[in-house]
Length: 433
Ligand SMILES: Cc1cc2nc3c(=O)[nH]c(=O)nc-3n(C[C@H](O)[C@H](O)[C@H](O)COP(=O)(O)OP(=O)(O)OC[C@H]3O[C@@H](n4cnc5c(N)ncnc54)[C@H](O)[C@@H]3O)c2cc1C
Image (tube, rainbow, N blue to C red):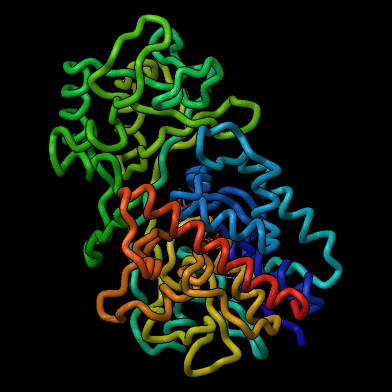
């Protein structure tokens, strides 16, 4: 068997490595760098297009559990991510360039993976995994629409700006992790007085934005709302959201603040810093003007400015079976964000499952596991008004017995149950896989 995989993104690379690891030949098609997407900037595989964070590493958060399950199950991209970690408190953030080059090395070293730089415009014959992501090229999106016979669904995603460390005014900004007093902190904080906050909000709300094409309705993914859209929803929305000051006290003066913008390290060298939660669709001119109002960023040099993109996904529940196959033609699988799951780590998990299933895995991961949730979401959600979702504990079956002790205890128990079920599954499937 030779499997074609369309897209060397997070899902496509993981699927290719899983298949090759199981002794299956793979042709991995990637159109970059010859043809770029609106968000990717390199020709490297597994490029992280926006934040460099793979989110929480704590088991009581579902993304943390999913990462742990991927580690235990032998995910290649998870291994790459762990090896490129940059400090980010309880989250797993990576040096994005190092992450992609580590994945590239893994692909290059595998004799069974043939990498082809080519835009796929028609669905190849034979077994195929379509992992072309939310920014699948127009020609491929047309070919997929030809298959599915329905108009594609879409939503908008926005990217946050990145600034040069040298240009940050460290007389205003300070290092500190939320709720921690550790000397070695991972986050940089730009603090606002009440007056500074309200004049920032005022300018943000009235700034020029890039508008969607006239025939498109702007549908945002809830977890990635542009900062100005959050501001539109209420004057204090940012102060209770991405700019919340709780747990942040100046380590020297002990001062508390009305609001804080946090910056997270973008690369291991610490030369580039990402504005956390500041994805935006303001025009470039306005981004520079408004974000330089942030105390500490008065002279900020922007390494990358924010932007907004249309994301395409298929109506998974209407089109896919429970093994990620296209109902009308079972040789075709879909994986990654194009299926309507959302997020880096979810896309890696989806690629992992596609690789395993295409490679002949019979037993599905149990419903109680995070891998089971990623598998089931695009197949079993209601097809009416299907919308992308990150992994979250709401997707897990509830505990059979009532758990007392609040949300945190409940989640810890769900994680414990998931890992026990995962171990059972792994020991059942590992001899064959
Ligand atoms: C603007 C934006 C910001 C995002 N920000 C975040 C974030 O901060 N955190 C987060 O967790 N998730 C984020 N996501 C969501 C999502 O997790 C990522 O898009 C993730 O990379 C999806 O993985 P994937 O493998 O499905 O697709 P991708 O990683 O996008 O991989 C798809 C690959 O297919 C290639 N391709 C497309 N069409 C063709 C073709 N016809 N022929 C050959 N190759 C093709 C593309 O070049 C790309 O390399 C964001 C998405 C977007 C669009």
